[in-house]
Every structure is written in C-alpha cells, then in structure tokens.
Image (cartoon, rainbow, N blue to C red):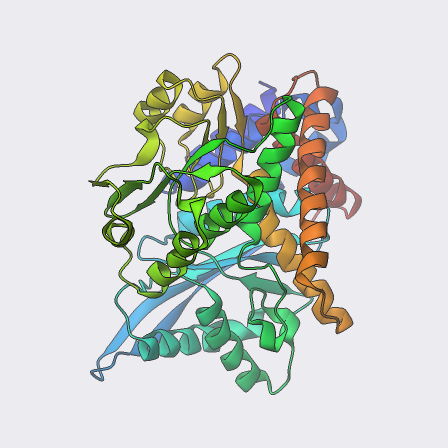
Length: 450
C-alpha cells in the first residue's frame, strides 16, 4: 500500500475511533487507491486524501414533535455536506433508530463516489435522524417531518444541497418535508428535494430506480461473462423500495427473486417473488403497513418463513444484499462461497463487512460488485429529476428508463476500464473506487486548496 494512503487510513482510525462505520468505508475506498496516488504525486502535494475524508461541513439539530397523545418527543437530526467539488451536495435522508454520526458520515462518504460514477454534476451528502417511523401514525410522521424540515430548510436549496429519501423516508415523508419547505420559503422550489410525488415535480421511475439500476448493472456484467439474466435465481434481503424495484425488473427480465427479509427473519419463495404482479405489488402493501415484518408475505402466499435468520445460506445464482449496512459477516460469506455462488452484488450501502468483502473478492472466479456502483441508479434518477425541475419538463417513464439503463452500462464500463488501466483485471470494486475518486480528486485539485 502507498505510504501516503496508509498514513491517511491510520489518521482516520485514530481521529474517528468511536465511528466504526465511517472507518470501515474509508478503509475500503482508500485501500484501492494506491496505484492512482502513485501515478499522481500532485494529489499528495495537495493532500487530497486527508481533505476528501473530512466533511466540508456537518451539523446536528434538535427535532421536537408531539405524538397523538399530546406528549412531546425529542430526536436528533443530522446533515453531512461531505463534498461539493463537482456539484451541489446530493444524498438521502434516513429515519431509523440506529442513525448515528458514524452512520451519516459513512453514507455521505460513499455518496461522493457513487454520485461521481453517475457522470452527473452532483456532490456527496447525507442526513437523517434517529427517529423510528415504525408503528407511528400518519399524523405523527407528518408532525415529525414538519419539525425536521423547520430546522433544516435554511441549509438546503436546488443549487446548494438536494436531499432525497432513504430508509424510513419514502414518497409520503418526502411529501410532508417538501410541503413544510414550501410553507417556510413561500415559493415552489421543487428542485430542493427529489423522490417527490409525480403531481408536484417528481420523476417517473424514481421509486423503482435503485432496484431497476441494480438489475441493469447485473445484466451488463452477465453479458461480459457470456451469460443471460433470464432464468437466473437471485437471493436478496429487505422488502422495501429497493427490493420492490429489483423484483419488478426481474419479472420483466425473466429472472427469479427467491428471498425477502426483514427484522423478523426471511422468506423463501421457490416459485419466485418476481413470478407474479400480485406478489410484487404486495411488497408495497407490506411497506405501507408500518409493521416492518416479512412474515406477512409468508402468511399470505404460503411460503416458508425462517424467523431470526438471514437468507445467505440459500443457494442462488446471484446474491444481492439490499437492506442495510453490515448485514453480511464472514460466516455468511463462507456460506455463500460454499454454495458455489459466482455473483455477489451489493445493493444496500455497505452491506458487507470489510473482512467478509475481502474474503469474497479473494475467491477465484467470483465477481463482486460494490454498492456505490450497483445502487447508483437511484441517485442517478434523482439527478434526472433535478434536471426536469430546472427545465420545467416532464419526461415519460420510457425516457427516464432509457437514460437509467445507459447510465448503468456506463458505470460498469467506467469501473472495468479504471481497473484495467491500473492492471487490476476485471475488479469492479477497485474500479468503482478509482473511477469515482479520480473525477472528484481532479476537481478538488483544480479548485485549489481550501
């Protein structure tokens, strides 16, 4: 490893010892960059790495809301505006009880390179709160969103910082957030949030975009390997928007998604979740119920349910973790390898521990793809929504889908080309890190030291 890269990693470990998720993603990204740093001594002179691992700004704020019984509650809100070298900060808001500064930082850092890979002019950011929407009423969620936006609105804008949804923040929450923003600003700045409803400036295909993009990415890699996506079995985790998009596109492409998971366990559907529109559409009903359990699917469709377990021991052609960070540990990675899986594609943000990821990458013949590339379709379509808003245009679902498909093909190519340029073969993990980094690093270098 390049000495400068190693020193930056050690600095981060010492400075952020209480932030394990952030350390993990910094180590994963920077460990790929030695050949780039060797080739660009000017980046060392400008201290690009120590600058890129430090957020440009990060702040917290108090969010007070009142429940249906009139009892006030206080949560913490966060926004990390990590890097704006290539465009306004762009990244989702996550409402989940396990949100911490470390989680927000790791998501924001990943977002820098993910956004760069889309080829669109958007910087990296992330935000959210430790508010848990599970079990809350519609009015409680609305009141929380209104309070959250009252604290945040001063620091965002179409050319400054454009939040979107993430876990716990779907179209309903975006609507409440935008309604409060409009109320406070007194103007229709609909480019300030993405993932909006289509009636007020949202883009067609945005709810499905991350899942659709993941499937387009998979199809492109399979094509490289001389294989067809049709007939492939896929094991995924989660049952939210991303899983829904994967299942929906898998149904159209002839692939079979055989697992879903939740906090309560996982289901195995041998016929395929993607085998009928009824099953795919039921995922929307599950998410809207606020019960946050996958058992509902098992009870409705009569398939096996495995309480308290994860689906990584299931035999499938492709494994696609699509739920949350650090979902796949070394023991699970070993099960995946024992089952002869060739394709391991991260869809959730950092779903694999570094130990497990390194183990999987070391397996001969296995192709591993990183989340920052595989799930980039979501933010890519968010940026397309920004473009439509700025030009006061409305594109059809077909137009958006064509651009999304092309974007994912370009991401695979950019990652593969970057890896090949530095003699790394078909290493999609290193290639994605390098391709995203080079674009942002060069912009930072050209803008001077600040």
